[in-house]
Length: 174
Image (tube, rainbow, N blue to C red; front, side, top):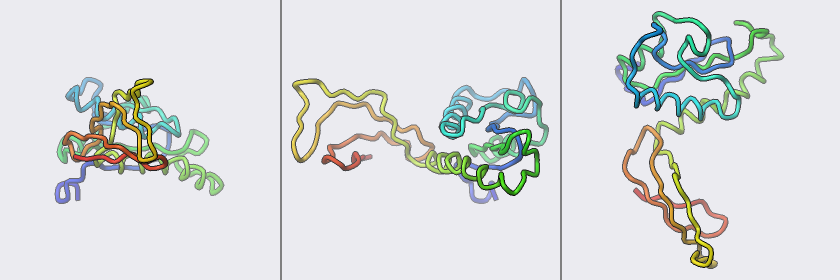
């Protein structure tokens, strides 16, 4: 499926550990391009922003190497941002009690949404400046200086921010 459809990202679910595993996990010394590792770490940080799961390669997150790991293959062969969310804690083990299923599912909605969101264009503002006395505030909008960039996996064109009316979201133009 990965080779045929070439998804930008692949998400695997596994129990247990309350962490997010990223490639490469098959060897302690496996080389990964610095830019790719940074991408995985950035996406992992966004995915764990609400559930506070640990993020890292298997030995960093679950404490051991993992040969034949799906994320390693998805990244190396499929060129996909492939991650595994290890759901549940040590008391949940591999078969959580029925009363824990919904709480585990709820704490993992955000990571799935974040990864899906990260596959497209993602607005990052490295700076936003409204200079006192120089900002133009009217009923039609606010003018401010900003430095937007794309932090997502898709649409890597340069984005610019336009003016927005009060109560609206910022409008983006590629």
